[in-house]
Image (cartoon, rainbow, N blue to C red; front, top):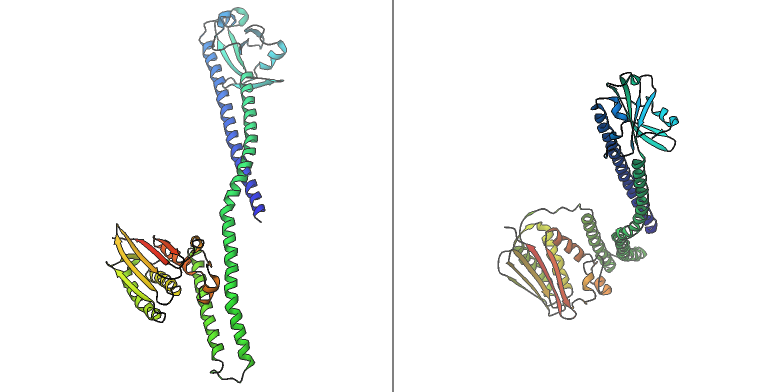
Amino acid sequence: MFNQTRHRLVILNTVVFLMVLSVLSTLLYVHMRFRLFHETDEILMQAQKRVQSMHSAGELLQPSLADPEQDEQTTYLIWNQEGQLLGQSPPQSFTPDIVRHFQKSSDPISPQTVSLQDHHYRVLQTQLTLPAPKAYHGEVVVTIVRSLEDVNHTLHSLLFDLIMGIIAGALISLLAGLFLAGRALVPIRSSWDKQQRFVADASHELRTPTAIIRAETELLLQHPDSSIEDQSPHIAAILQESKRMSKLLDDLLTLARTDSNQMQIEQAKVQADTILIELADQFQLLAATKDVQITLEIDDPLWLRGDHGRIRQLFIIILDNALKYTSEGGQIRISGRVHSGQMDIRISDTGTGIAKADLPYIFERFYRGDKARSRLEGGTGLGLSIARWIVDAHGGSIRVRSELAQGTEVLLRFPVHK
């Protein structure tokens, strides 16, 4: 699938690049052609003004007519009113067969292009009334002809260079397309792999409680005459797995909404220290069953702007993990203070800790260092993923430091809005 996508991206990028390069090359060629023809027409106009400034038609045939700016590419053809050629300057520039093609061949107002076999000329005619010998009958028509050999040579060279540039651009764009398509598919492939792993993990997590509920239900149906008291262990197992499945579905729905940006954060003034004190009292009841002590060290009121419900959910996830992995006789410490425009909240425990190899992956979905123990504790591997999203949504940061058998410390840092 990814190879086909990569090939399509390469083809698409190459085609788009070639189209852009072709359009730019065409515009450059048309612009250069216009400029070269415009310069040629300017030379013809200057020659026309020079002719019009003469006092006698006989001056057209004098050798002094030669102008360094006009060079040998400009030729003057002189006709009488009957269309007879009276002369050309420089002399013998064209044969009689070629000269007749210039006779009244162009518009007397604007220059025109005349093509003769493989040669092209730019032609401008002007009618003059000048004092002249009797042979000229007083009026002559002057045809100014300029060869386009240099112009065509320049245009052919430019066209060749543009074609070579397009071919080279095609090869470069093909190679660049392969490289860029590969780079572009890296995050897509990573996202696809994460999605596939997410679906597989979710299916696995849902399969376990579903299988337990089914098995317990079948056991109940095998003894239809038994009382509820007799079957209470099976009913309790069904209830426990139903709660676990419900929590898993809620977490999956939360993450799905965050991925699609449908989860909204309500901005309000939140007093974090009050939430921590309240949760510490509630968790103390659970901690007492494990002989775990929870201590609070909050110096100042902790105010921040955010969603009260999400901040509470964040603290519950961290405290629940701390209590879950802290053995009997352990301690959980909660501290909070404000300094340098930032709020630091630390939740540390003396629990089992996290292996260094697992620390980089603890915020990934469904990742659990000790899968067997986590499943027994009722964990789904989604809590820290949700916690990181809540922190990011509030513009904060979360860091975890831990060592095996030494405990874990979670640092939550939020900006303080005055």
